Length: 302
Image (cartoon, rainbow, N blue to C red):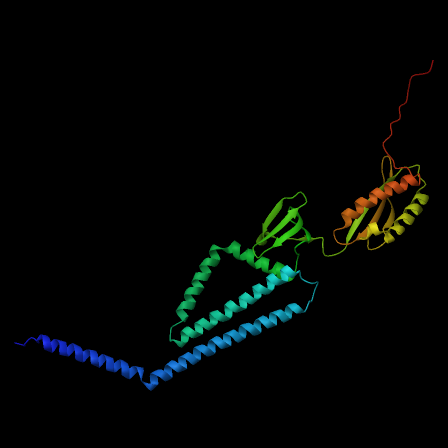
């Protein structure tokens, strides 16, 4: 039979194994090949991080350079800041994600499976949040294409008013009566922007059938031409134009006036112009028609 080791022999064997393990660890730690491989690995990781940082800085500099060249009408400061920050973040995420994959590859970690899993997860999230993705993509192109800005007067569907806020997911429009419409960007199909180009005020003026039309037209044209130098009509871009007789009503002759104004100032100009025209016609004894009732007594006089 084998003789069982004594306690002293067991302790001696354990101590020998411990010293052997320590010796192997010391040999590994002081191995030239180990430190060369660790140094190369550290150098490779440092190089990857440095290159990623340089790529991000160069990309951001290019984006800022592109934004400094205005190809169309200037972007609002808020919109430019939003789009610039968005593009900078996209570049940072993409570059640093690629850098992380490169670092993992340096540690001999298989990243192909991780990329495949991320792709499957991204596909699942995309299917589950299609409307959100659509809102974000549409919001990006609204900002990128400068379709409308904060402060513009627009009509989107049934909402017509001033743009209060533009985000990547929603657009907020405040209507004249104070309600705030919050519209998902993915639902925006058509936008009517009234703040890009000059506006046109259209004013219809009624005079009576007894009025001398050529005389009234000459007086009104003279009055309209004088408005361009009036400080109260600073939003007029050109003298208003009398087009002539627009239509013949049951009790009046309607003449139409148009006036080019600064964007979205046609409402205010039209209101003031109607008031001043009314006073002008009264001063020049041009009658503004109103319905009249004529009573005929059919009874024969006695």
